[in-house]
Length: 388
Image 1: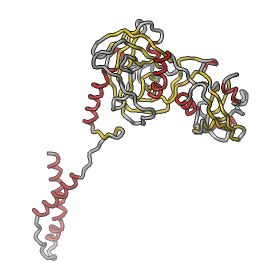
Image 2 (image 1 turned 30 degrees about the horizontal axis):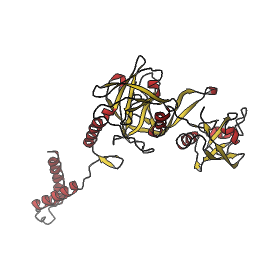
Image 3 (image 1 turned 30 degrees about the vertical axis):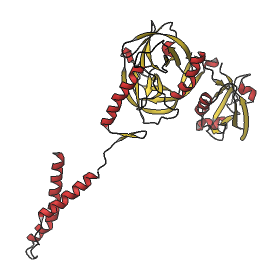
Image 4 (image 1 turned 60 degrees about the vertical axis):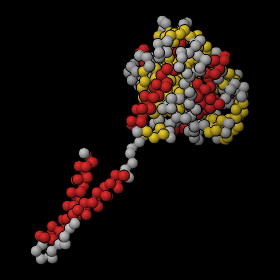
């Protein structure tokens, strides 16, 4: 009815516009009589133009990767995604400490979750979406990535592992879905977007000097993450795991804040070693860096640029020490090396350096650093050790 009404209004306006000159001429007694207007012919012509324009109208769609979806399509995708993925999402009970979430990593019963979900636990109960319960044993943990692996002897019928997405497949603005067990409410699903990429999370393990290691390439999302969601999967609309929900940054003491998920790159890198060895060994340089050099710090440090990872300290007898990296003077902040490339790749800040070390190197590997030292570029080969 709305379309017909709109067409009627348009026709009336157009006819009024067309007929207006004729009416004006009738008011002018000195002008000759206006020619007769064929209203029916004009009406048919207007209708034809409107129909032609409506046929060219393009519906508004939302794009996810290469797939265009309307609102209805998105709803159907979410319904189907939940039916597909939820059976592989598990509720983990760690008596008497608490509970969390996890997901089936492989069809032989391995389950991935957060380290902080299982930390301190001696027994682990797995509850599947159909109500099946099974005891699990702890296979391996890694505090620096906040990942852990459990194993059950057998999966329920119809339950299969969730597929993992490829590394670096996310974009800011992309739809993501979190499935888990917030506050013990099993099988809860929430929708959000990727709010940011390249974030970092500090390890729960403290090292000498009160500092800590950080996990790079962490995903920031506005998909609600609440207590009990920890360890559950963050999924793209294809049902692939893109991250492991781990933490929420909040200043209110509630679950209102910024959600963070461990990137799937860490799952690809760390989990196979947890299954095989029970632990994961990171490469290690043995140096401390400024997280990013500001314009003020550029002046304080006496540098010629802000891009790079600035060496603040070097651990004695570490790989960095043996390679001859120079730390800044503790009193003036000047004189330290500024790492600008690693294996030929440009370094914008410490986050870039850390991401490369975590996801592209292993202990015993030799890396080639280019540093700015006293205004000149110097090549520094460095043999990486094992993170203590």
